[in-house]
Image (cartoon, rainbow, N blue to C red; front, side, top):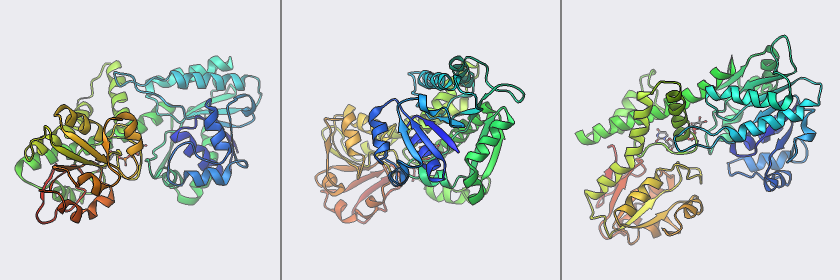
Amino acid sequence: MKINVVGSGYVGTTLAASLAELGHEVTAIDIDEDVVDALNAGTSPVHEPGLDDLVAANAGTTLTATTSYDSVSDATVTFLAIQTPSREDGSIDTAPLEAAAEMMGEALADTNDRHLVVVKSTVVPPALPDIAKAIETGLGEPLATDTDGRVAFGMNPEFLREGTAVTDFMHPDKLVFGADTEWAINQLQEVFHPLLNQHEPAVITTDPATASMIKYANNAFLAAKISLINDLGNICKEFGLDAYEIADAIGLDDRIGEQFLRSGLGWGGSCFPKDTNALIAAAKAAGYTPAVLKAAVEVNNHQPERLLALLERHVEVEGSRIAILGLAFKPGTDDIRNSRAIPVIEGLHERNANVVAFDPVATDNMRKQFPGLEYADSAAAAIERADAALIVTDWNEFESLGEEFRQMDSPIVIDGRNGITPTSGMTYEGLTW
Ligand code: UDX
């Protein structure tokens, strides 16, 4: 099948390269020439395990990239994977996506074949009609219905986690196809046919708005689940109890499940913070204020302060040298977007601490945001002369730091992620245990 993917960010590149790997003939369209050149040269413009290999294996054959919409109208399906930046109030800015949708409509105006334009970007349901309208504007005619029209509209949300995006794409739990016409649903079935054959994921066929809400509800549920275990964890801490022991027990209840019960500093990354805020903003605009979701965000925002309060119980923070271990928003990625390390650094600066930070891969990204901060080359170097160490990301390599912690004058470790096992002679405090 001939497929276009508009936008070569993290989602678009994973989608384009994976679809090419599945045997489709994919054209990636991006306005950034450097991104297009990188793809055509066989390198991924974004860092994601396994993605470089997929791009390298398919570039020049089943995967090509271009900055122009002109040559792509002979494809049957186009995915729009354009970013939707957050505004100050948490709502998403769909202007770049609408611009791309209109250009795609224009490119399809002079063709005669049927075509499906699918939104892959995460877009709140009330904003979807604007995207559909933008395609119609470019196209100069209404979108297809079951009985009429040539260009159909659909929504196909993604559930990819950073660090495992390629594996997640190839082994999905579920596929959500949102479209108003049978033909459009059939095209989506054909696009994902190789995955349907291999792994038999659940397939949900529905309308575009419901498809989009499934994505938001999915993320909101997981984010709120973590915030609930953090709320309970904070209670446990005050009661002198271990939230991890309790989470292990409640996770055995099938209705709760054992995943996403790791309490601590809370959630970061590009999806949970952005999507929960976008959903709250869209709900408010529609006249409803979602109390549980707002509380989930509040709990999340509060956890870094609780970590610092715990630190203050053990050291006079002002003027002290505090080591931060972990800067990425989770292990396995160099992404620092909405990382809990950011409010931790800011809180330490407010308290006039001397901060030294280490992360196995995310240091370069954090340096752009905090150029003045001291960065260590290793965890050992970070904690060497520190008065206390904070575990902010649960990288595996921190688990084996026992000897290095013992080199500190009086080892104090405040763990925000249940990332290490305390050893003798160490003052150790967990955030929720
Ligand atoms: C998430 C969703 O999982 C994915 O389906 C969606 O499409 C995009 O957002 P991602 O942001 O890559 O993926 O990371 P994920 O592994 O879900 O973790 C999100 C955050 O929650 C991280 O900051 C992580 O540290 C935190 N987390 C996760 C916890 O604090 N406790 C947990 O038990 C699990």
